[in-house]
Length: 368
Image (cartoon, rainbow, N blue to C red; front, side):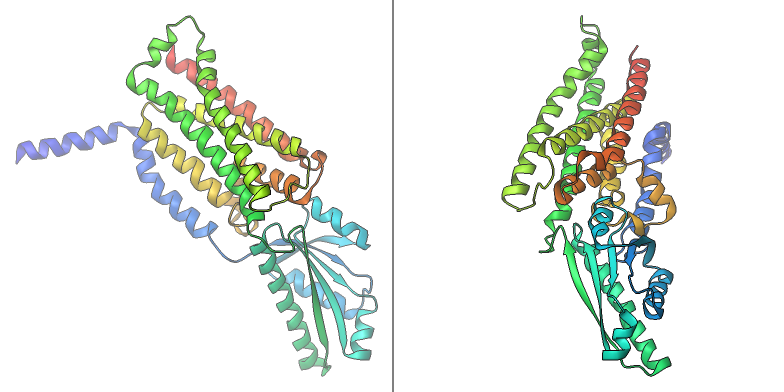
């Protein structure tokens, strides 16, 4: 029995000595329950909407107020003519526009009928459908209010218009997300494992005593994954356009350039993981926690970022895939110019430089 207890004690000591593995084993359940508990939700809250109200009468102001006090909407501003509708959608400032007709209240009192146009950004079909349902329910609530308080029988008919994806195809939303996830998986995870494998097998020291500089050795190991990711990028784009019928409305050149920038960021992340670990299993665990789960849950690939608590929204800002997906959606689906995604490009570029500098510094320190 004493020998058995000694072996058990030895195993505990062996586990506790590996601090990074302990952090992963104890921290993973906490991170997963927080992410799955708060990020996974079918509700859409705090969505930005814009109002076009040429009437400015008692009915339109009341409906606007009901929309504003709802937990589902946040009125980002008003627009003054129909020509501004496309520009506010392309700028990403709103996901829904409510357009009231002229003399809205007069028509409602005189004829008992009036119309509201609900225009939605359908690049994410699920979110667009949910927002339309929320807005329609609020409009119906105003009709019931008219009956209860003012004894006015009014029929307000919402007219639905879907931009960029009138067929409500799910591929329009998932293709940019899947592209980001695949590139992250190939570049970051596989690069980190490849370098850690050299450390684990003891062959990295052999490579470092070769005439080549350490930086060139790392670049040489990263180039194949860059090439494979470029092939994957080409394959996904061809399948998306010709099989899934997802339009490439913007410049194909800039779509490729932004994707290559994201590949570079992912390679830098893989290098960073390789400097933090010496075992392939630990590298895979870190890659799974730090790359896969955040990309799926916090990048906006599946669940809108606006729904999440403030802390998760802040965390999502440091996830490269979020900015890549936003840029690709705008370029591919909305057909915007490169100037409209300069913010996303600047963020990805800054991330690439910072991660690469930290990674190379740590790598040299560990291997000297």
